Image (cartoon, one colour):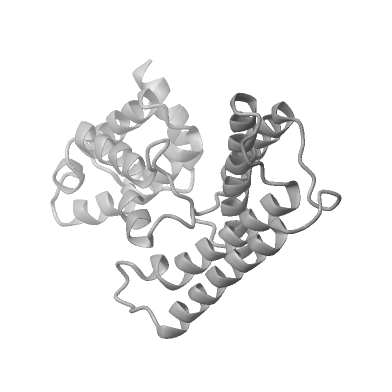
Length: 239
């Protein structure tokens, strides 16, 4: 049964010079193959791993070295592969994303703000009927401009964190200009009549807020969008 497992996997690598190995090195490859199978590696993954290891073993063998001396024991070799894989993949919930497409990062931040605005508007109105409610147009303008400001902060400050690059006065100016536009447009939207800045039932607003946050989460997961609120240095440390 041991030999059957070994030759089944080696059969995937007919172009590799297995016959060039000494008896001890063949036994080493057999042991590694068995442990890779137990570790849940697919046939293709095993083929790739062994195709990288065999040339090293054959080269070392020519210098009188055993595979164990070159790669460590089979257990150590397989453990190093699984450890590298775990290190390469951030833990669930800690991933910040790698897609830095500007409009997607802006949309991600805007949906976050709009979702919270709508949700809080709905909840506050449920418990305090006379509470001030932001109209739809005003909420969209606030969220869109907040998303823009957050992206600019990321673009000119967060993305340079840990890279050795310094911020510029151009970046500061653009962020300040966008912030001023944010407040100005929000103020202007608040003066709009109810016909173009409507308010809705609090339950509907809360539901829309939740749906927007779910949409934000789905888009972030689907397109691996990097958060505009996370410094690049933080992202690097987690990856």
